[in-house]
Amino acid sequence: MGLNAKDIIELAVAVLIGAVTLPIGISQIYNANTTGWNSAVTTVFTVLFPLLAVLAIVLYLIRKD
Image: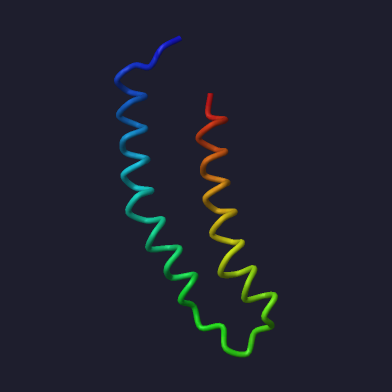
């Protein structure tokens, strides 16, 4: 089983879309107004959530076989 042109094109489009949308989404989450939130909730929202999102995407791409 090898890579064909369809797989390569799908991967290129997915990487391009991810490269555009992920930084925008992560910056919007990081710059959210968290005034009045508990510090633990703020940490989870601004640090852990983006890391888990990236990890989920990577795991999805790895397990796509």
